[in-house]
Length: 207
Image (cartoon, rainbow, N blue to C red; front, side, top):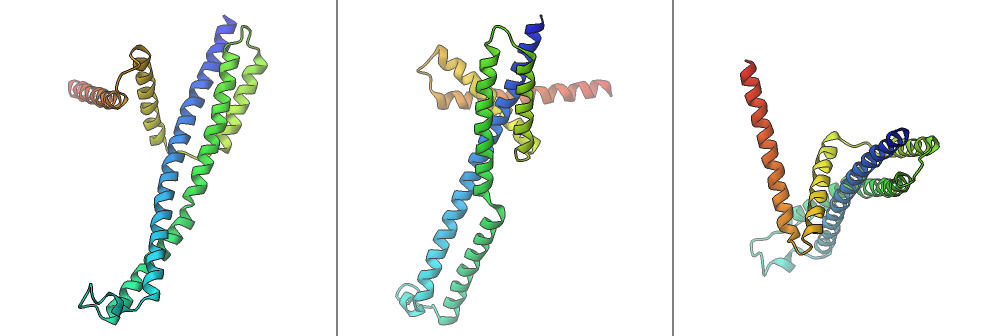
């Protein structure tokens, strides 16, 4: 009985760590994409500004016949301002650094989940094992960047979706993954609609 309680504690810690790991990797991937787009537009903007700066307005007269020097200088100044804003935004948001932080925490939690799985499979789990796991998870959580609760909700839905898809693929390895993702999303939306309808009905009955 005592061993079952200890195993339950390990399983709970492993589940929490698995969810947190999924959240951190999800946010890290999102920040990495945002950082890539921002860096790309900054680079393109800087290149265009450099080309326009070293060229004269009359170079573009065959294409834009009504172009004059004042308008050309205004265009160059606008592009330069946009590049400046993008550069400041990139430096201020530090999306690349934030992505790395979340990815590192995700890797730490991956190692934690593996360790927890090994302890879970032991025939005899000691109290020291539980204490060590709890302390390790606490230390990782305290050092991790803060996360808005909405990301945990989204990650939990996504994790359940992946688990359901994995179960289906085990039974049917040749199933279409893209179709399964659409099906799982539809099921989640349907469940939410049913729950909301049920809540409204209960409220109306109370009134």
